[in-house]
Length: 133
Image (tube, rainbow, N blue to C red; front, side):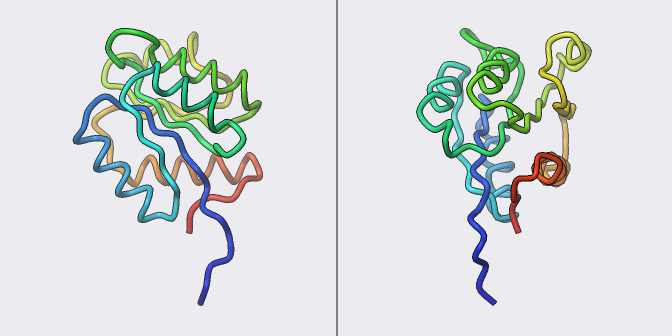
């Protein structure tokens, strides 16, 4: 059976290479197209270049020097109103209610990749966008 739906295009901003690989594999296996970047600056650049294509954002909060995940998500919502956003963090979850964008999800590290896949699918369905398979 052929699948006609186009995969939802997700931006994933994460500075830890092992997490990048694990979650990218899980998202791809679930049918998503994923663009992975390592810094907040790269995330904002990707948002500006690809805003017409993106259907979701997953971002770590602490991304080293430069823009953090809060900044990336705010820029994403400026460019794409209602874009599904998932934050992942090992230490910043307590700031989510004050710094996070509305109707986003926070998932604490460590997490199972399936948690992110399910959360993105739910956010995309809520937003009326098609998710992965």
